[in-house]
Image (cartoon, rainbow, N blue to C red; front, side, top):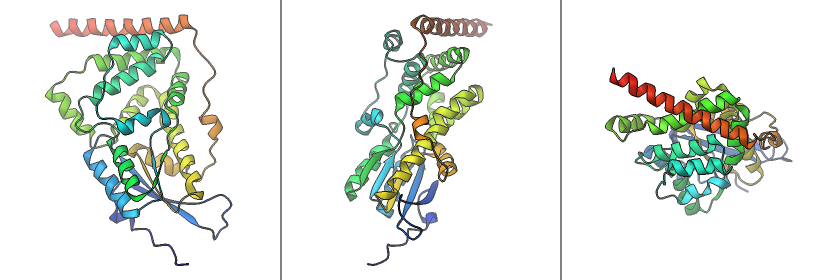
Length: 296
């Protein structure tokens, strides 16, 4: 049997790119090795979409892993973004279908998404089309969104919950469809906007980073390594902010049961209402202060 072709030189492929290798369980030292091409994208960049096409066509993988979970699968057929009303956000919280953080976070992402020329997740839709074109399997490689958001909410203290929810809500309320806003979005296209935004929030809310970034880096590294038994070549499409974390955890033991467990603690309804009231109160006070200072 002929030897497998040598993987392309990384410098000839789109960047940022991590090239990693792994042998499947049960393969000896001389057993078959899987090569992984992990491409970092900016999530809202047309250039990133072109990079996805270039990489998949160049290395022709048997499997393409994308940074989505089954709950976010609808992103693969998205053709427009619907922004929920604040009334719908309140209903989600009041009925217990979402925590204040989940509801406000989703609303804010939809609000930002309306201003983008490239719909969020376009690189994943491109990856799906390119994978189908060469007969490659597509694997959803991210942790369930409900688990991630529940673990984020659980990691925050009560005042952090109030402050974070209020900050997200105020950010959304203060957004204006202006040229300045469009200019800022253009700048954000130059990086992995979502991960960078999370890291910025992490400076003020350190508890966010482990469940929202580190644990997902671990989860994706685990999912990628599992593919070693199924493919000789794998392409992964992830936010650029996850590349270093996947590298860091590549050869480490990962407790997948621990990082996929739902937190047991649930706040009683009365305390949820207090959080919502405190958040609303904080936004109202901030609005009043801004209006007052604006008149001076």
